[in-house]
Length: 125
Image 1: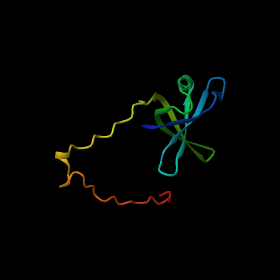
Image 2 (image 1 turned 90 degrees about the vertical axis):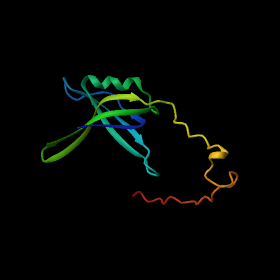
Image 3 (image 1 turned 180 degrees about the vertical axis):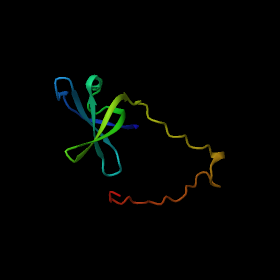
Image 4 (image 1 turned 135 degrees about the vertical axis):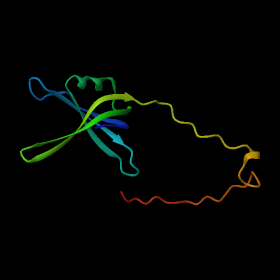
């Protein structure tokens, strides 16, 4: 299964040699999720460990990853194995321009509709 997600590179860890022939590197991205940001840990393995070197903590990145799971001694483990990372565009989408007075949705273009303030509740769900 292949997935992708965009977030801010929060933390990079050093490459670890797990055995003589296997190496892995972990990193964490921060995902804005309302009032409660999520910290998601990914793993790079083997020759892919070096792709993280091109990025700095704080960079906005897109991570392409596979979801992997396994059992060991009646315990179950899940890994998010990253296989590609891209830097996202720094260009911010521009807001649409205001309509011309002739295109205004109100009879009097200077008249604004009343704004209803809706407060966000601070529950995480």
